[in-house]
Image (cartoon, rainbow, N blue to C red; front, side, top):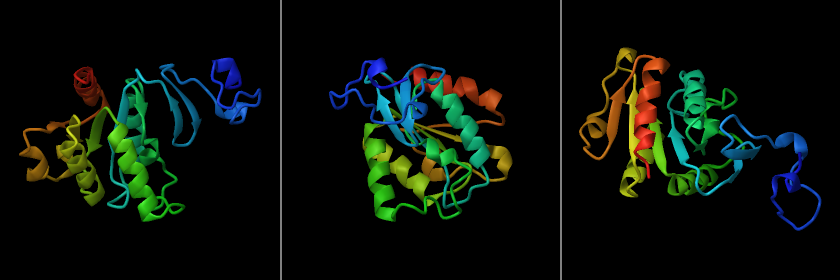
Length: 184
């Protein structure tokens, strides 16, 4: 499969921009994944920014992968790398802090909705939630009370945020679907 076969003409040449093996249509047929964190996104498809702890702790990386898969059924997840088991405890070592900030703020600005897994406390996730709220983006904060922590009062007490607890992915699926259905 080439980009030309998909009706996309990036350079008006017959050569694809990327090797054919890196282009595929996912289950939801809503986006074309070109390479990690690089997408051709169709304008009518919901763009979801998923926030989860990276430098604050990677214990939930496997859970993040499953959450991202659930979110992908509703649209394009701009931040799939958050679920990567390949991230080091310090995050993305190949990028500078400034590059990460610039990229993530651009994704946040472009997102239609933000879903933040806030069970593991993280300064970065808190910052992303605050930035999304300041931009008027709809934000869903999800957390597991069984993890032995209480949700921050700054999140739980903010009427502009939707905060939902869950114990299992099965319990979370309808919460995500209900929230994402409200996004214009």
